[in-house]
Length: 468
Image (cartoon, rainbow, N blue to C red; front, side, top):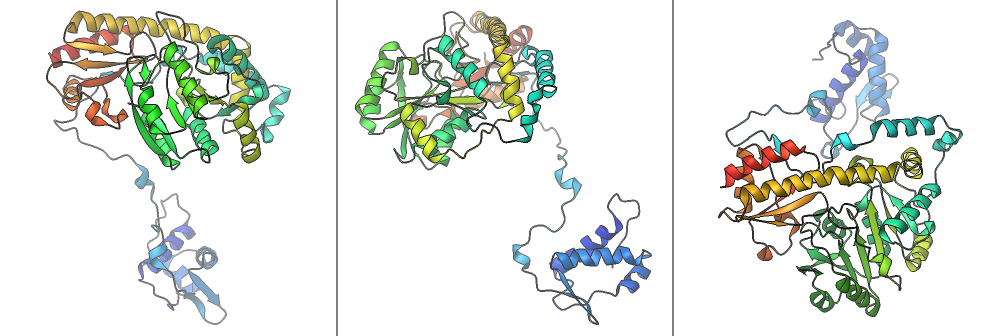
């Protein structure tokens, strides 16, 4: 029996179609069954004959039934096991209502890494530049495919910025725009697949980078860290010809690779005809010293692939990053990836071009550095005043996070659970390790960029009470 809901937003013919289709899929209407005549079904359901006819025609067009003159509409043989669920309801997408249990606690002070303070985003400037592009003569380009490496004017601006701030030596042709650092890393994986299928990574390492390598079929080899960066003896013994590193602010430990080790790493790459993937992800954010020159700026033999992003200063949601390829790999890119289109929308690229060209990026960078330094200093001073002698702080004076090593006998899991009961969100470090035997299991990761200075003080006060 078919049921018609005249108060539903769904058209009547679609209600009939869906119910008949469901009966065919379920087997209630088996192969060879004849559907009721149009006139009969229309009379039964008190609907127009055209309504029933439209439903039948839809079933015919999708192959559920076949119409033959004099025989009516006959149900066809359907491979039931290969069909997806027959009818998706709006309620299927509604979030379930969960009951708070004694194990669930609301987080009031969330030290989540890499969530930026929306107050720092230059919303009015971005809106003005967006309107400027929309009203300009160049808006016609939005109806076409744009430059495959990304907007040439934006790449020139990025080149100037990298030269002045990071010492990167390159031409605009070597810069390829990508929708974030992991998109850039994915392209690098494809470029180097024929060079090597083994990649060395720092241990601990950014988990998204590690997963990107794994998902592209690479064997990932963890290399431990020393006080000044990756262990070069273990790297040399690994036999790999590719290494991924975050030398200016190692993630997540915050270790800064020394100049001597940078030079030795370049020497290793030259001797082994290997490549260094330098992820320079938050190198601009140093609070008590000038930014450290990139490894790429020291490279005389074209062994460094440079990756960076605008996410840590401007906004992760813009998904805007880039990589700088050595000339040899650029030839490989042109030979094998010349048909790839830039994954960043043209409109966003043009707005970013004007944002940098008009000086807003430098002002934004200065503002962000000042704001985050205040929060960083407040975080460190509050921890030192309330937890002195009972914790070690790793990775301070740069970036947007620290690691807090806690000496109270609790494991990482216990520290996080205790903090959550106090209404404070802190996060695991174990996710970033491959060799967990080397991890002390008493640390948490704490980002601070999205919190106010007052919230930081209140959050640390609660942590101190919960842990000690």
